[in-house]
Length: 374
Ligand code: FAD
Ligand code: UDP
Image (tube, rainbow, N blue to C red; front, side, top):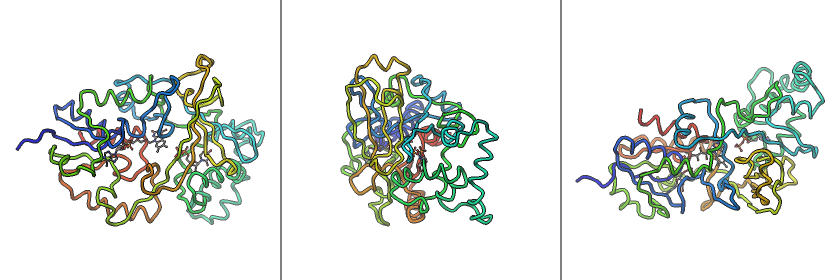
């Protein structure tokens, strides 16, 4: 018997929405369900005081893949936002991020790349000697090799331990390699060729992707698994993979973030979208001032109010939002067990950051969904 839909797509985040968009272009019928009250997954924005508030954490789109950049811009044009956070360091001073000539000047007063190189070599010599030729094995060793002890202690250690709830010496080295180290006066947080925020906010991107697709909100797949599954020939599942298999091997772990959002009666609270707070005396990791993602220069003063979110990083427990997968050994082994079951399924496609238990940025999430159609 012919089913009502070709695909039941569980989750209206970027993965599910891109998949639905592509399937629809090919004449296939999709039903997208989401347990939340809105579409968009974690890129959803809520409009407060005329400002798009990134409800599930600040999102900056960045990619070097021109075809992905063209793909999203064909749905909604992007603005010229460039992420350049500043950090309040453990010495109480403000420094530019990522680590670049501005940071080095602020830290050591060094003015040229040659002076920086000499200073960094001096800082790193003892650290290299300590490794005796082996690769750095954890985040602490990696950070000391990349930028030396001063920067590690003033800008990395306390922030990282707050964010991950673990000692730097117990975290994988790759986390800190996400940050560029640059010998130029360039505060751009990313190395990618293209970067920005959709003009009018992320909801426009999701609405564009899901135009014409059937959607059911407030619908948890696991509460009506049988009847929903019966509606479609195939399922695209973007929820947590361990939940799909009823946690039979155990629960995957995450870090979660609590956002404390406040409306302030000032037009410009911190002068930047992102300010990191390194010292452990501050229980939050950073403050996001949302208007700066979309309004530039003194036009921010046209709105007398602003909205800020303080981000508190926490250990995940059941019922909380799962944000950052913890890619340590225990979780990697556990994920592999679930993955081995998933690859045997013939009618179910697993995709996105929760089903693949991977920290996917937005552009790779889209690329992953598109690759299924190639
Ligand atoms: P999600 O957006 O999580 O969508 C999954 C959807 O599935 C959700 O809507 C959920 O409600 C739904 N769902 C789950 N289970 C069920 C169920 N049982 N029934 C029905 N529905 C269900 N990327 C960047 O490129 N730049 C950034 O600056 C950036 N910042 C980030 C900041 C934070 C705090 C986090 C956590 C991520 C950030 N990302 C960023 C990554 C980005 O959020 C992801 O790449 C993207 O959201 C992945 O989309 P997805 O569809 O895989 O997952
Ligand atoms: N980090 C840090 N100090 C900062 C900002 C970042 O030590 O002020 C470290 C921290 O360990 C973090 C990593 O760099 O996990 C990667 O930073 P990024 O901003 O990419 O993290 P995100 O919050 O996007 O995962």
